[in-house]
Image (cartoon, helix red, strand yellow):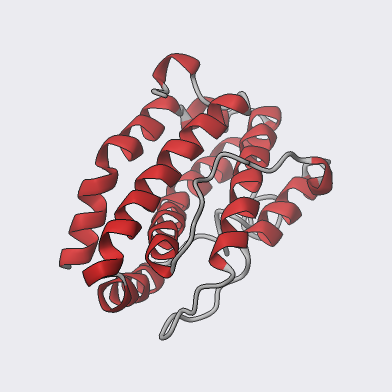
Amino acid sequence: MSAVIMALRSATQDAHGALDASLDPEALLATREGYARFLAALYGFHVAVEEELGELTLPGLADAPARTSLLAADLTVLGADPEAIPVMEHLAAVTDDGARHGLLYVVEGSALGGTVLGRIVQRTLGYGPDHGAAFFGAGAATPGRWRQVKDLLEREAGGPRLAPAQRAAADAFAALARWMQTSGVARTDAVAE
């Protein structure tokens, strides 16, 4: 594993663990209503993050579909209006590319983990990448894309950009945990302030 990825993983371990501990994917994805609530919370997070990542140049990284458009499509299948969904406002200010690289680490790593959630959605609710679970299908990172992201982060997020990347990544996981709690998705007893 690369030094930058190891440093980012180490810096985010506690916040990422707290987020994971606050969620119960099997319960969240057991009903259409729970799934819609989870997607709405993810949509509110990704709108905020994509706005920040929009200014980041990603040399050597193949284009991927905007996750907000995939989430919007899934929400529409579920009967929700994406325009009516609140957007997360707790994201720490992102002022440089180092911090944006930290956000990229969180978003792309989470997308890779989304493939597991996609299988749960398929099994429990019958939604797939072409109908109702595009975010966890087409939007999920492939191992090849994750390798591209790791290579990019190794080239671009080291040196003086590493500390801002670490802070932003840890802050993003913590903000997402709070957002999931605010959105009624996370267990309230598991999220640390």
